[in-house]
View (cartoon, rainbow, N blue to C red):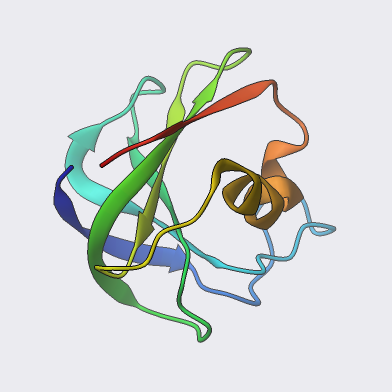
Length: 107
């Protein structure tokens, strides 16, 4: 899969802009210029980094398909770091628990 540059608009520890009970335990952002199913830029979870970021360059290791939503989420990690489907599910549960999802691992 490809490498992408992620602009982090919700760094680790930040509060969700619409739901103040959701705190981001991981960095979350988007890829400029790639439009997702919701008409906005492609959303990305960043795994494998344990500090707040402003931007990140990493490898797309998985896609989270939301069966009950119009968009998918990408999962990006540093080169050489991998996660199982269960590990990914646990780290994104804070937000994905509200959706019916399938995780597709990428090579």
